[in-house]
Image (tube, rainbow over all chains, first blue to last red; front, side):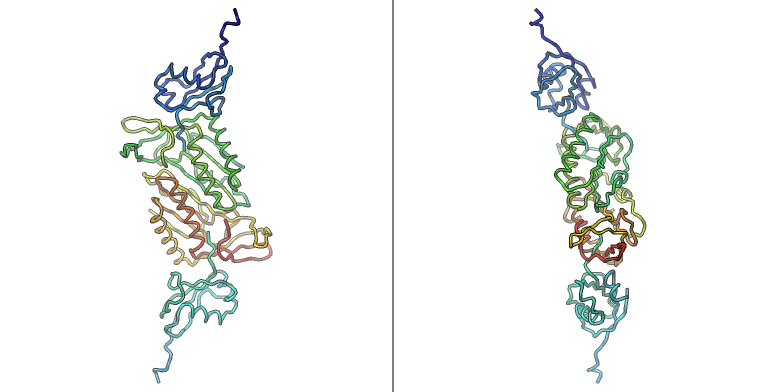
Length: 87
Length: 87
Length: 145
Length: 145
């Protein structure tokens, strides 16, 4: 039976600026199926916080820009944010 | 007889940097024939201080760069100097 | 020799520009970016900003700044780069970012400094909020400046 | 709004760069030029400079600086320019010239600052003497820097 169970992994999600305002959070921990990609995580977050979809979003994985197809592993830190505006 | 006399005008000559070192002067007053041009003045100075000829020289007349054909008038201030090197 | 920092304290431009003056160098080019009172909106209206707030994903921002410096040193003949970015609340006119580039020849310093600020605005995870008398707005992506 | 000065006192870069921060501006680009310890000679040898001396035809230098600023403001979309040039004896590493350009958009500030230093070195009647352990030399024309 165990073979049919979906393995879950826990990851940290960070929000900044506009995405922190939308979600009302700066950091959350979520459990996702193993083998989930970074862009799938972003879809899960948009389902939870639909206003995120009104922005062009960027994702980082463990403090590096992510292209989207990266597999997110247990303990990873993923951040989701709008286009940067420093300077 | 007066008509054969050459009218002379007095002008100030300034030297800077290398030209001041060569001439041992920073400012002199000289008398030149009226209707002398700026480049003729520079030739007079080179005759007096031949080492000036070993440098590429620039002339200013009354604090403006001179092309050379300008007539130098009584009381004018002419400077003769090497290529500038500020900055 | 290079440095890259985030700070909530006011930035002194000289302390960045003159922190290192290598003996082979003759020129340091510095960009001082600061909060503008008036900005043009997309609709052509001019908006008056009361103050700014900057927020960063700090560890990632420092990593991206370090990468930028490494890339600049590959691309341009420069000796060192210093970048300091302010975070938190900034009053109008206060410096938000200073980028200084020292090089033996000034041409490379100008080119590298211009490249660095353009890339910083594109890649370093820092966000700016403009606060107006009647609202506020997180800026997304670079405005011209 | 613009300023151009000659001084025998040490120059503080910030006092130039931040002397005017107009409300429509967002960027100031500053060139800090300073005395290099080592310079390459035409024969490829590196020479060690002990200190420098700068001399100017002061009233004409100020006029030429003023002309440069007027020409830069015609050519580039900039708000103001400040130029301060040091005269007299300078130790290695001390600032000889600061040119700051403030503008609403940084691109124009970079272009104008680079143009101004190039033209200053070509036209403003100031001369630099390099003093070595075993001699001295009035520099004629721009060396690269």
